[in-house]
Length: 191
Image (cartoon, rainbow, N blue to C red; front, side):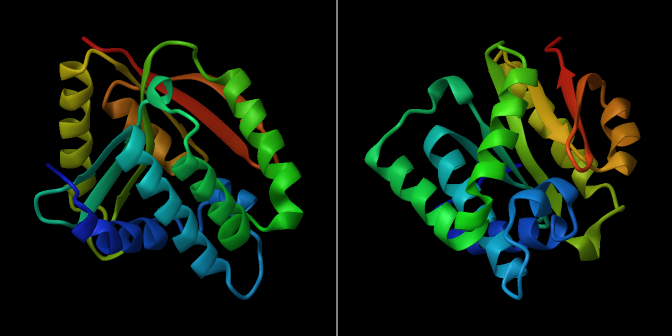
């Protein structure tokens, strides 16, 4: 696993856009129109920028998988963060979805732990290379990184088939939220 650079941004955005194109949680906040895939790209672009600023962006050594990690306690309101938020609203969420998106984020924050966290915002594998162990290798490296930073890992998933995968790595479901889909909150304590 290596730190992604800005020169890797397009690749990271491509991997995440393709990996999350049918994800219920992502599609819940994205304006559903003929530009849906571009709107998902804009969300992943935003997420990359936020994690470069207030977390870490990782690429697998073979550049077929990536992980976006956020440290919420380090996130600040800056001119850049405001610009990114406005760009997200205009290019991804859409004005008509702002209320729904803010309500969702508020509900998620109420259910999230108040601990200092290593928040695994996105982890994705190029769909052409999924189910080949690349994601597992990357997740193991992410877990080691969280341990070196002495932060428990937190994440949410709406993908039921991923629950057993996360549980195999020692994650436990600590909360659930019912939106128009079920969102699971997972945590892995540091050893």
